[in-house]
Amino acid sequence: MAWLFLLVAGALEVFWSTCLKFSQGLTVPKFTVCTIVGMVLSFVFLSQATKVLPLGTSYAIWTGIGALGAVVVGVVIFHESLSPARLLFAALLLVGIIGLKATSGH
Image (cartoon, rainbow, N blue to C red; front, side, top):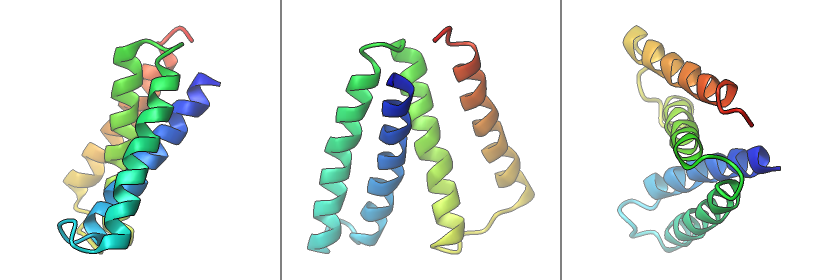
């Protein structure tokens, strides 16, 4: 269950960071509220995951999911460029997330 909590926390991190972009510097109220609610819920799920999983593993995977998800959202929704170098480093993030999960012992 802890891994599910961590996955949800990471997905919520992608959600709130996307809402942050849409909030235009926290000036659009509905996206500002979504950002804050998403942040709080993301932390709630992360805190539940860290009850069972090691802190370093949990935090690294949570931020990795958020970073990788933000790259995907940036490319798909905001039409940011996806150069070969960006693709390589996004792939390295994914490898790091999988590696931390595989070696966590949980």
